Structure formats: structure tokens, C-alpha cells
Image 1 (tube, one colour):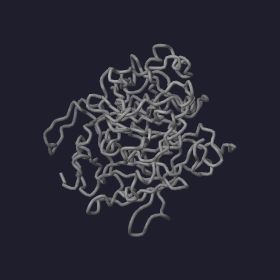
Image 2 (cartoon, chains in turn cyan, blue; image 1 turned 60 degrees about the horizontal axis):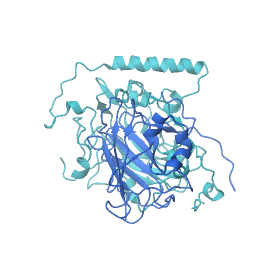
Image 3 (cartoon, chains in turn yellow, cyan; image 1 turned 45 degrees about the vertical axis):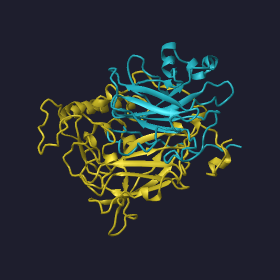
Image 4 (spheres, helix red, strand yellow; image 1 turned 30 degrees about the vertical axis):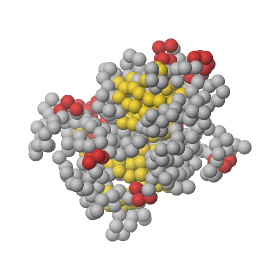
Length: 296
Length: 196
């Protein structure tokens, strides 16, 4: 392991896709494929059936689904981890109508550049990912925390349980944070992540993605999601992406390449705007204008 | 004075937090809203279970709450705690056995007679979108009886939202994502689409 990698971070969290198959030995050079694993064809057939069923429902007048399904069996880990009872409608009260406050004392400006966390340049395609965070009413989410994490250019996470035999990059950890500007903008400089194999089924690969964690102005707007890159051939094969059964909704997770913002001989630019759910609070004029209000 | 609401935009969909958040989301003292052992501090502890009753080793929880006086904190500094400012926000990845511990205070009622609760967001590998819930303090039974959300629930479901008071003054409260004793999870929007 490269010495620059913080051991505490590296060993932070024993999480795995398949605890049962874990060994404490060093990763072998070759991997026996699991003959019992389900095939991509099996999974694709399941996803296709769900997609066709949704298309029929839409045609019959059902509302478009804008969020992933919590119960989406092709993502096998969801089977025992989704509530079987409907979410209970509640009106947010007091604390839920406000959000934790984050600011520049929480996040250093340099944390938005994932390529300068170590002594050398990370390997891979340097990119700038930027956009705006808006609430469902179109208001910019100003001065709020955005956190990201991702695999390196080879598709490897700095995580001790990531057993993918792709190289760790000693110059890339893959964690960034920033505070949005007054107009809700964020910008990260990073490396384009690689596709990543996982064990949902045999030959399962995640499309390249960056994890995003966002806060709004109310706790009800809290969201964690993933940003994808345009034109990825893995989209139709990926149960996590396909758990959003509506194509328009899925498309909202895909960034746009922006050649105007691409920096010559430096970095390719991608844009991705994020819309949180609508606010439930009655906003004062000052809040709506982005002023620092005393929240009544 | 209030503003008219502008045009509604369609929200960006969620995706699972996945398995590899452990080097990204946790931070120093993330679960310590105040220092353990300091005056007024309590422990909020529990376990996260899946539909087979097995502890989940890869969930991450966030809590957000009023201070002991019932005021909503609006102080920055949750990520870099100064040891004195109560920000009301905490985060913890669960341990290998699915257990979690926060050090916090009993939130006060945010309005006279209201039942105090802590707002919770649950994330996990295998969970496609965060789940919101609440953990109510068990002490003020009259306030609990008046609470609008609790009153709308059957007794079996209602009890999943009320913590037990531990002998040491702390709170114990488990999260069950599915099955027997499934925790009540909340939909604040009413427009998020079907959950199944």
C-alpha cells in the first residue's frame, strides 16, 4: 500500500458486497468466476420485464415515477432492505423544516480539487464537474454542503474491502467537498472514474459514476445520489441505474459534456445541475432572496 | 411577508449510498454532537436490521435535532467540531454488528406541549433512497398522545418511533428496514411516487 494513503481512512470501514466470500489473504492474481452466479442475461430479462410493465402502466395513465424503486429485485441487495409498508405521509415539523448549517469553517476551499490531495498528479482523465444546486421551486441552494466520492481512473475505490484487482493510485483518494456559492453553484476538479465490477451477478459492471451527497435548506430535502457520464454503454445493464424505471428520470442523473468550459490542454468539463425536492416551509422575503435570515 | 412560489422543477432522483462510503462520509467526532460525559450528554444507541432480522453492517445514519431548550440550531461547525457549539447534526456509520451510538442531548420541545423528537435519515447499501424517520423521547406521555404523526399510526407501528429510556439516562432505539416491527418511514413530499 502506498504510504501516502492515510491508513485510518483506508481501514475505516469494513464494508463489502459479499462478506461471506471475504478472506484475509492478499488478493490472488486470478479470480475463479462464480459458476453459480446469475448471468447478465437473467438480470437483463428481469429488468426488461419491469420496464415493459412500467411502460404499460404509463400508457394506461399511471403517473411518471421520478425516484428509484426501493423494491427493485434485480438489485439483489435491495431485497431485504426495502420497507414493505408504504412510506407514511407526514407533514414536516419544526426541526425538519430547517437544515443543518455548514460553512467555510467546515470545508476548506482546496477540498473541491481531488487532484491535489497528494504529492503527485493522479492518473487518468482530468475533469471539471460543475453545476448548480436548486430546490424544487427553482431557488438556488446557497452556502450548503456538497460531498462527493468516487473510484479512481482504474475503477478502484480506496477501501480495504474493495477487492477489484485494479491498481490503487497513490495520488488519488477520491473524496471531495465544497460549499455552494450564493447562486447555488458547485465545482469539483477530479479524475474521470473507471467502470467498476461488482458481484450482483456474473459480469456485473457499474457505469462510471461519482457519488453526490447534498443538503438543502430543509432536512426533508436531504439526498444522496450518483452522477453518470453521457453515452455509457453500461446503462441498460446496470440494476442500480435501472432501478429508476422512467427514462426521463434516469436521464436526470447523466451529466452533459461542455466543450466551451473544457480547459485547453488541461481538463474536460462536465455540467450537472441537481434539483432537490420543493421546500415545505413558508419562506420569508429575505430567505427567498438569499439573505441570512434569523429564521423567525 | 411571503413570496409566491416559483415554478416547480422535477427533483433529481436518488441512488443508493453504495458500499464504499466509509472513506468519504464519516469524519472525526461525527457521532459526538457534544463530548461524551459532558453535562447533559446522553447516549442514543441502537441496531439497524434487515428483513431477515440480521444486523446490517453497512448503513450510515444522520440525526438532526433541536437543542435542550427546543431551539433549532443554525450554527456551522458540524464537520469540524469545536467542542462547545451544539450544531444539532450528527452522522455515524454503523459497526460490523449493525450498532450505532450518538452522543447528544435530549431535545427540548420546539413548541410548548410538543413531543420532542430527533429527525433521522437512514442510508445503506441496497437501499435506493434515504429513509426519513423520527425517534421520539418516551418521557412526556401526554405530549406523545397529542402528537399528530403518532396519533395517525396503529399502536404496533407507533411504538417503532418511540425510544426506550435506558437506566443510564440514554435512549435505545432500533431501526428495522423490513418485516416484523418494520420502522415507520416518512414521506414528506406526497409526490415522490410509489415506494414499491
